[in-house]
Length: 211
Image (cartoon, rainbow, N blue to C red):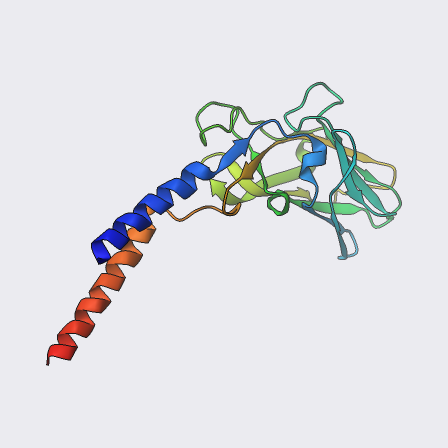
């Protein structure tokens, strides 16, 4: 009976994996729900939720700042598919930016190659108009080697984004949809280990009962 159950668990894990769908053509409105946090020079921060603002466009922000995007995140031209961060009125300056796209079931696709997660297509390496004034990193690996949940940007040394200044950058996202949920599904090896542990526990209990 347990052998049949173990086989069933392995088949289930395979079906869950194949049930996940990756959408590589993502427009700004499809990012609705992701979390955007801006850090200021005085040590404070502000977190807002990305919302669709029109057909293929979206934004997040407050009276102090605004992050916006129009079009496909892969980038269609020098203006469409490009991210814009504006300091609208914080005189302490913007010193950091975090974007957690996983809240919208999206992940940053950073590999400009077919070598990566199946169906994710080509990604887009990060670039910006500020060069070495900023540093960036991708964290929260979802699927190696290309899909990450969070983009983190920091201003280097004493640099910051002053009032009326603008950060322009490019990075791609893919959307992940699954029949059960949008989190990475268990690997067959993990489920096999669990099933084996259950089997060992049952044998241990049976041996104790016979004594």
